[in-house]
Length: 557
Image (cartoon, rainbow, N blue to C red; front, side, top):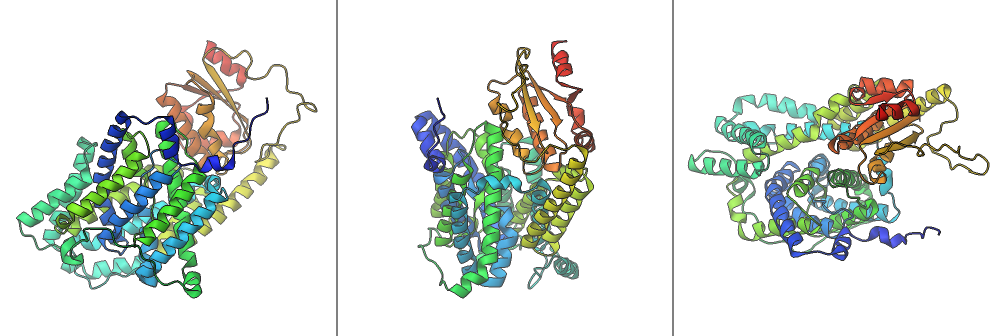
């Protein structure tokens, strides 16, 4: 019986509808309430800190968490995605506000929302897999460096009329103001930082950010320390959402903001789909990438309408949502409701929060974004990929994020073409795109690889280069296998080359197998992939066999 083609509109049905159709009980709702409240507690200090670091007022971060957070969960293609302001936007938002004013940011965010909706409608979500890991890691680490640098003033309480936007000039200004540092400010900042680190180590389930900010606020008030607070710098926070409003629009203004809007759309798309992939890995579920892009677009337009910041999926908050037992997108919607409740009833308390404690929160955010473990692994990658990583990081810090992404992607494409030319010279007939096989012209051998497999053994054959555009093939292998097999044989004889993104995908595959107690045996691996696996430290976690028959013998021995 022929397979019936899925109607296109099915791919854009929000996961909320899917969950409700499956059946949603009071027990599910209770679990979602707990998860939503927990995530809201984590999001509160983060939203305000990220807004301040972006050059906006703290209420803008809260508005973004409420409006965009609710829409991303209600309309998105992931069951567990938590949306809101994230560190990835800090650099872009700060620059847009500095160059075009806050009205310019609002308009650029709305434009980015339109671009994201269009990207989802035209099904461009699947193309995110083609962004190489060294590029993503490079610009993410670069953003982390910039976020850390932006907090030096509030960490040390430096007296400065203004902080230069350029990285080198900024550090020169910090050094020039070194005699103005405030010991009281440093006590609050480094005390909060130490408290966050201790809580995360000893009680990882506790809301470290909120506890540290609360303790710092109480200490500063009780000791009457002369430190800047949200109230002293920004005044009272509003206790309600603003009325919808859009700035004046003109063709000249739209043209001027186009590069910034494209950058915001790119970051929102990449970060949200990366977050959705992380959620899939933690839960075994599957997101709808194009539905997610449409939801991100609607959420960013909604945030702009209420004067909020750009929003995307937040990986850390999404992971917290899953760990605390979320069952559906309702938890993300409730997280937005809880943040709104804080604005309505507890906003006056935020005026006492020392900015030094929020700087400590952002130092931790920057540390997490730097992904030092992944950086160390990529620095063992082939030389060209190390160069891509370092160039992307350097351009992000010293020049511009948009330029860094463009240059990084072009360099990755050139490196791939160079590698392919080498691979073809080694072994002709293996292409990056697996062609269909005519079974009549070239019948499959009778002894297919799945015949006579020992019980409890699953096999999968990879063909073609395992590079940044094809690495996602490994992500679905375990799901295709059905019940978790005790042994997994991965045939790689027809894989002529592998890059850092391919190693990353293979590492994730091996970790998921290990978590399920599955033994992985790799057969027929060629010289280049084996050398890269050894270089990047993954080979020691695998078993190798010369061919498929030897692997079967290892299993039955």
